[in-house]
Image 1 (cartoon, helix red, strand yellow):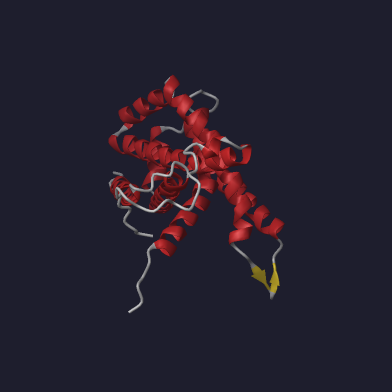
Image 2 (tube, one colour):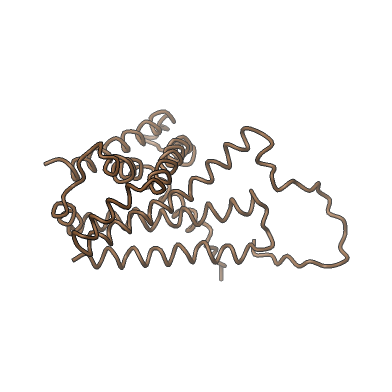
Length: 138
Length: 117
């Protein structure tokens, strides 16, 4: 952490084999790993997209209409479709890892991993229902 | 004096952002990214959406989605560049750009959410 990497002309040979920059293309599981990590780019994109919507609504009805027609342009639709695939991948992998990162005890007993994972999916369902209800219901 | 490392805090933000984005983004993206633009569903009226955004609770939730999600991106992106593409000699620059970007983005989110009319 925080080391300076200075390049010197004369240094001892590294005692490790150089790894190709494209090591993650060599195996299916490595590639799955890098896809999972890449999902963060789409998480950031959606934050930007959401804030653009917030700004459009704040500016007035015209801006909101413009945002809606902009969001229907082919490029933005494509970006959002790809984003959705990556965010679903992100959600699945994050919920899968959650029980391992978060050990829950109830009454001195460890809650089985399946329960913790299922609780996250229930949370996703509940959050989705609430969002739909707020935006479209009532 | 114990030296305090930012890593645990950054990991907490990464983790929190990962959970909130996984919970809220799928449905928001389906609606605002596909269903409304493609006309599968009628988008909410301007008045309704403005009323929803005026609610302080909505804005609090949206900030709670945006800020940790940006730090989630910063942390993961930084480590992916480090491990995946092995850009090790630019480690500090990348860290500053990633976390700096998350800070600027969070400030922008706070500003935009605060200034909803």
